[in-house]
Image 1 (cartoon, one colour):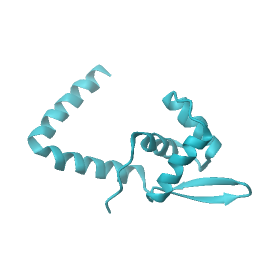
Image 2 (image 1 turned 135 degrees about the vertical axis):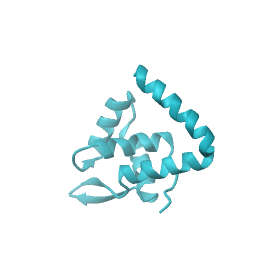
Image 3 (image 1 turned 90 degrees about the vertical axis):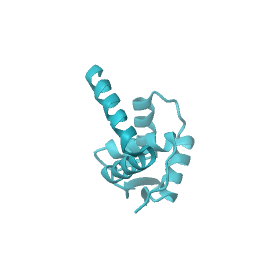
Length: 110
């Protein structure tokens, strides 16, 4: 399965949902994404990103009373696996080795 590309903002919101230990509503996602990524996004902004993630098939939502909760459709490991495949395909093997060396150096300093 090939996933649609995510913008940086959509990835931040999606990572926030992946990192949660339970299903979240808009208020919970907005609070967590703002705290984690030092943003000051309004609920309307986060709602726009969530709608895109639902449309792209990463999330689904259901209504409980007046509140919508978001459920993960695409697992983080599946998304990361495809992103890694795309990276390798784009850069080819000789450049991936250089990337892995750079990553190793970065990890040593982190």
